[in-house]
Image (tube, rainbow, N blue to C red; front, top):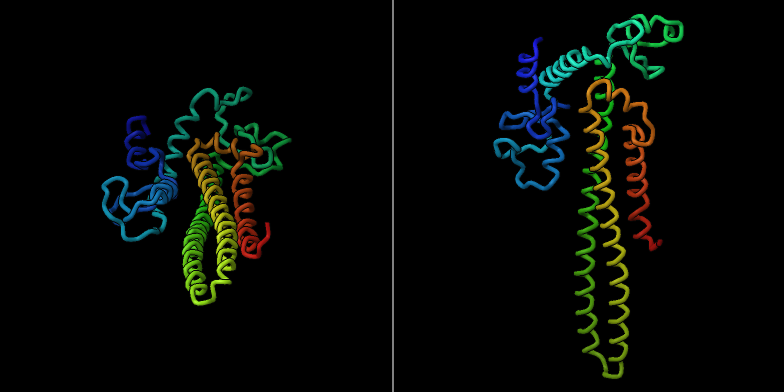
Length: 282
């Protein structure tokens, strides 16, 4: 495929939000298609009603199935680009002067054909670079779906926590009125008790409201952290094949570490965060 044809082919398979080749593409009600992560982040910002980022047409449904045909075409477009890029000198084996088109899973290295037959590699499993990269992307996409579902669940919990704060503030205000009315019906000698009662209610109400607001703040910050991890994983998926395979073997910033760290932290907070507050624990 010549460069002009490749450019036209890829332009038809480019997401208008991120300007990259489609990743886990979905086609919405108006017929336009986008990367699922791009659309999720776009709509998560609070568009009501949800509209198409391209034509602004209203979309009635919040969730869509992956467009399988478009996904396969996007994979072919990435492969065509990768084949084009591999013709560059840095992807040529210096020893055998052949393209390094194989990926060794065990050593996490790129190999040419003759290198893959050397004794240190013969026992290892080798696969074409693009196939290994697409497999890695698919694993990332699955993790991202789980991560986004986790974020949606957290947003529901966050909304519930915010509602609890407002409801409790309303309860305290109503309780103050009830106490005042109650003391109006009893002898004047007890009016000092009314003052003490109201002060105690005010003090305890402020403490609990502060705890609820701190809980909302923590959950909001955790949600932003999850969104940032989601963006990082999306960026990894859009990397060229060879760069993506190199990312896989990095340490603290790798997709496996990031997604696990975020998921474990969030689950621990959802399990213990509000229950500790409800039970009066610090």
